[in-house]
Image 1 (tube, one colour):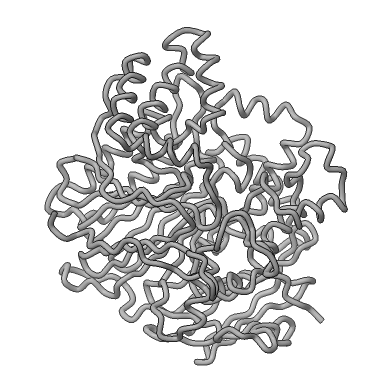
Image 2 (cartoon, one colour):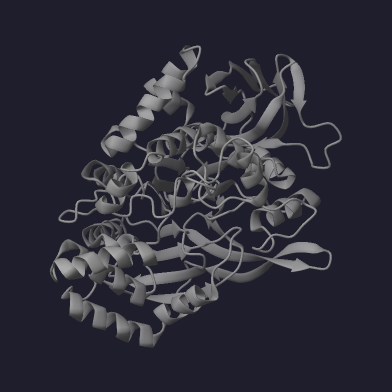
Length: 557
């Protein structure tokens, strides 16, 4: 009898018709996966095989718009979800009340959207012990929603990178890997292959609260560096050194393959899946491993062969999720965060239907607007590595880049300027949306920053990290210094030494910084936007979420 190893994860929910969704599962053998909903909706599909593992992305059709319906999962006709004696409420699929976008007037905005986001989540420790990072904000959210049927749930959960840590393993995972290979051989106590990646996802997503939460709240996901390795694709010299090792090829291919299976597929709509040649090939083959491996190898060798970025429209709210890791151009004389095709994709999707959406959200794992001192240091470092101050400074610059993680948008100055220009273009004029928000994580603290640009829309950098991790005290004080007046003065010193000039725009931090495990929630309704930040605090009765910010982003200043 087939059993379910992982899942179910509710992924795509259709906001155009309100009638369909997709649910991801992993089974322990080949089988037929079926989803049955209480209102008669459902779907069935055969599993596909990758590296001895069996997966299905079940298309669910016939859902009722504007309704919440419970569902169950069956494998070969036997119910495997909900689990017997589950303490959690039934897993449900909620569809939007007024699907589709209004054809004309801005007043006909359709349903609101409640989007919760964050990044950097190391798996929570077993229930019988405390880990080093404090309470998990996502676990804490799940516990609150499960305990209170009246609690308002997010419409979508946006996970902005570092869903798993391939280079920082828990004690339990290290012990598991040590039982299958010698940790004294490279890559040591890090993930080496696809099988070990599956262990990371089991550890993270089999957490009971997380498993239930992901079964009932749709999720969208994108990778960041730790999904593969710290500072992934930071520079051409870094890539050359990694490719010279004996273990890197298997690591990066396994990272891309597992990301495609566990995260990327669920980001896509049924129409996009139907048009995906790789998905068709994997499903049609008795074993799709070779096809997926060839795709991953091509994507690593030439980023233009794959697109990990994607777009989702939620009625009149548009989300563009941008790949800021695999799509980089790393030649020092032409560094770019996005290769030309990827930047054109971002531009085209931001401008398509301009005036037909009320809010534009740009999801980028790496923040666009950073503390000014760090921004200036990254621009300075890019000039050094480019050779503007000579070969000796170039070597110093490459060393600093890797030691200090100098690889955000500012480290790609032309890309920073291009994104700034695009945001100003989208946000200007009578057809501008009410807000343009860049949603980011990565930097292990949270803040709100606003650029000084002559736009009609309100423009924000909303950064929220980590969900479950920590930050060294020295780094915390470094970020505080980076936002300070002294930090701005020091940053100008970097600019003078690197002869880089001033940034193409200025900005200010308007909220934060906050340190701790946390989640931001953006609530959109018509042309209004409200932002909330909740932190996970440990208390005698367990962890709970404490609100530390509640702000109307569209209210006059």
